[in-house]
Image (cartoon, rainbow, N blue to C red; front, side):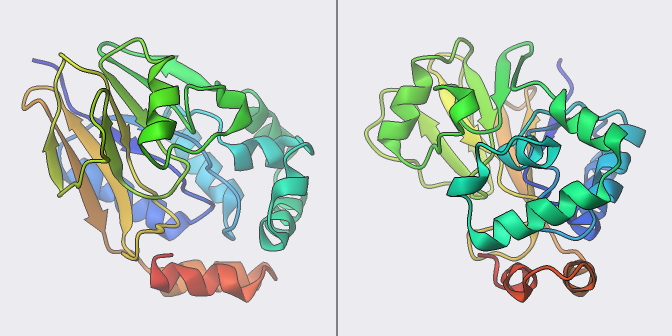
Length: 243
């Protein structure tokens, strides 16, 4: 029987949220963890989040904010003013070694029975959003294995190839090897589904299901780090709103 795997994504330099999620993963007895990217951006502790992932030897994919922080200017023009300010500040506080680590992260990965990408398998380097059935359809053209785990939108979601609607999800959903499914694991550091708690996902092959877990964390501490960095106050405020 395969061991469960925890998927974390969109940490966005929120160290208190990352610490709380890693503690919850450990409490479940899970040791296999994969990060789907966007370790940095928006939040006030990017270097600390990078070092925690490296210390734990957690494999990580590249997200669009990671690419920008590593030096990719092509994405900045399409970013909000607050996002650009956060990226420029992040570039200034990260070490050369940390920026190199971000730059060298892979875009996708293949595993036994599943694959991973930060945004979409439809041109991963374009950072396309999977928001609806049509987006999922474009993604499915490139998906080779039954399951694919993604992040990027900061919202838990579930699509099944051939279905005409986005599935409504509860905390636990069954998965199948007979049809392809793409599953958004939610956001650790900046949820946008009006639940302010950190979100991550457990894939349990033995039970053939996925389990979104919500974890409370020290939001005031994360907000204080943002304000201390001199970043826009809206980035701190949105954490308590889950949006």
